[in-house]
Length: 236
Image (cartoon, rainbow, N blue to C red; front, side, top):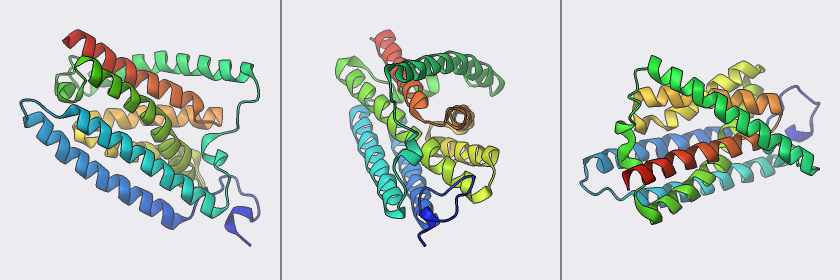
């Protein structure tokens, strides 16, 4: 009998373990490449931000497609990593409200955690990657929406579920997925990687509590978009 249709378990797998290993390997390779690109952008007088945005956008959609293909090949519905569909306007508005509340609370927590990790509040360390001008801001927003959709589906919808299934433990699944999320962003620096990992844990708790990644997608896309827009407007 196919594993996806075997006796129900508390945390069923969304795809094969081999597929998960491949996904992690791809993420690891991309993290290395992102670090390489970030180092070059920091050193450049005029960094090619738009090219970096476009490459990242393309990579995230390709990885999302690979994850979706693995889930379907396993025989599981794609909704296993996304959560149930909305069935009414009320449900949509509820998730928007949850996303807004989460965004506000997480901002406060990130500020506190950032101070504890001694991360400069000026954002100087990340200035090289933030957009300048209308074209870069538009591309940044597209990248932010992509990150919200793809990263939440991949890290919280897929990997978190897989790790929960492997360990049989929800907190362990949330922690391991958050660690992978932070590691994937180490190109921003080790302290930022830790902070982003903690941020990923917040998203993981939200997704597990809600049973859906949709509120996290909205909050993630909103946070990334706002940070880039504000940086672009201030610098302009």
